[in-house]
Image 1 (cartoon, one colour):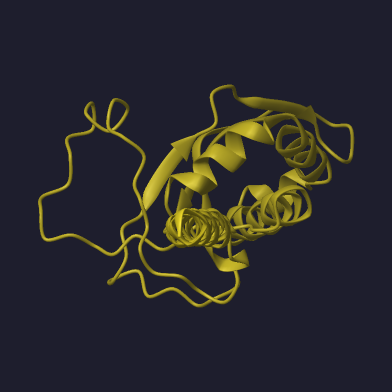
Image 2 (cartoon, one colour):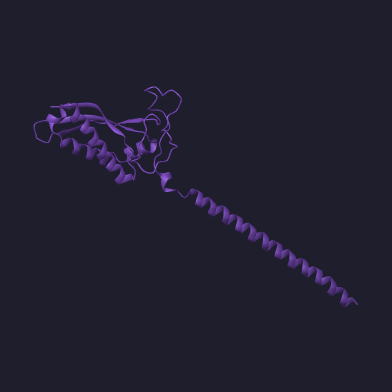
Amino acid sequence: MSKDKTETEAKPKGKLKKLLFIGIGALVLVGAGAGAGIYFGALSAHEAKPEDQYPKLVVRGKDAPAAEGDEKDAAPKVGTVSVPNDKFKVDPRKYEVTYFAIPDAFTTNLADGSGFLQAGISLSTFYDGKVINNIKRQAVPIRSVVLMVLSEQDPALLSTSQGKQRLQRQLTAAINDVLREKEGFGGIDNVYFTSLVIQ
């Protein structure tokens, strides 16, 4: 009888251990699955969609624009409207414009060798601060392409307003080409002259 008693006591203890191991194993598996789910979910959330890496349009706010001096210290504008590409036609009444002055003036000889041209320019964009950051990052190639475009100009054409407007379009296209090549997105709406001297 004592032998039967020890066998019956041993069976419940063995079953209890077995159930304990199964329970712990199940908890480990559930925990590992949950951890993997959280990990891979976070990875997929951080995967940048192509449209997320490009600048976005800045919707015109109802607030009054900042004073001229405040613009330099203000945080870069953040856009909310995605567009299919940087050649999207923008309605200037719906979106904020940001101006960025190129720090140094450009000086170059003119195409016919009769004189030189000195120009200061500012760029405008309806896109967020990413475009301004792209301009700053690509300052050297932008400066180079602007000098090349300026050096090809005919002084007789630049003496007319049509010639100056043509130069604005050429500079806008050239700068957007550089930004598209280097950053994948142009975003410059127009080039404005802050100074223009032809001698």
